[in-house]
Structures are given as C-alpha cells and as structure tokens.
Length: 191
View 1: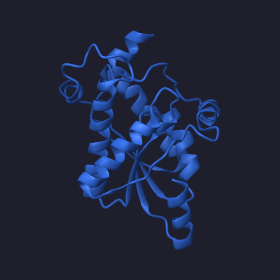
View 2: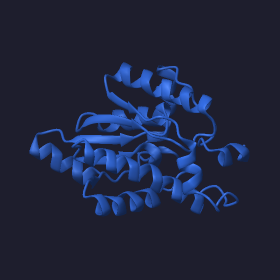
View 3: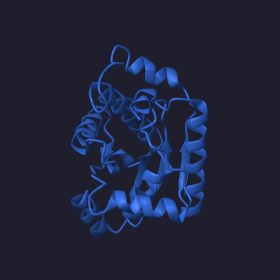
C-alpha cells in the first residue's frame, strides 16, 4: 500500500477507491489512514451477518460514521442466502478456516464487480484491520480477484502501525456500536 500511495503522491491526483467495509469501527481507522490519498466510497456489503437486525444496526452505524467524516457510502441490501450458498458444506469449519476464505472471496468479488461497474480505480477492504483476520490471505484473494476483474487491488494490513488501537479510539470518539463477533452465526456461536 505504501508504494502505491507514494506513486499517487507523485501523480498529484486522487484515484477513486471503493472500500469494502465490514463495520463502522473498522472503517473508521482505515478511512483516516488513506483519506488524503483517495476519493473514497465505503461499500457496506455483508450478507454474512447473522440477522437482519444486526445487519441494519451495523449499516446504520456505517452510514452515520460516513456522514460524520463526509465520505460517500453505498449500503447493499441484506441477503443472507448469498452467504449460506457460498459456504454450504463448510458450516463446521473452524473460525478462520476455509469457510472464512469463501466469505472473504464472496464479499471482495462483489466489491470488485461494483468498483469496475462504477468506474473506480481501486478496491480494498477494512477486514485487514482485525487482529483476527489473516491480512496475507485477504491480500492474496484481493489480488486474484483483481486479476479476474481487471480492477486494481489496494493491498493493506490496516492493523499495522496502531490501526486496530486507532479504531478503538475512534469508536469512542464517534460513540460507535462495537460488536464482539465477526458477524456470521458461526463466529457468534464461538463467543
């Protein structure tokens, strides 16, 4: 990411970035890290969330944060069938295993397709902010999808350089709802 940002600084123009967001707390720190270098739109697409109530609560917080930061947001409708179809047969996999990999692919692929359709230059995800998520795997998936779709992937590990701690601080500043599980019924059952 730093190399790409360095190139952007030299070019002097802000490319358009579609940033997939899992939730407002995670997007808060990610947005503050890259807002000076990209024209960002947050993309809230999370069919993995365990209920419509939880999905809507997170979507409302995402919308509220984006309004406070003057960042555009796209909120996709809730459709848990997309998630369950993607992870069918992997229900008993451990957290962080192949079920999560399928979920990451689902959300990042939809983000890339949206980015390409709407003329964005890059796509990325806030998922790399979590200490519970494998940033190397997410970057591999994002890079592969970039190759499939022709839209550039912005590699990241947003948890580095105090990113996760910054999200905790910003969650307090903006009084954000901060959930204690990834979002899917499988991760919820873990806690």
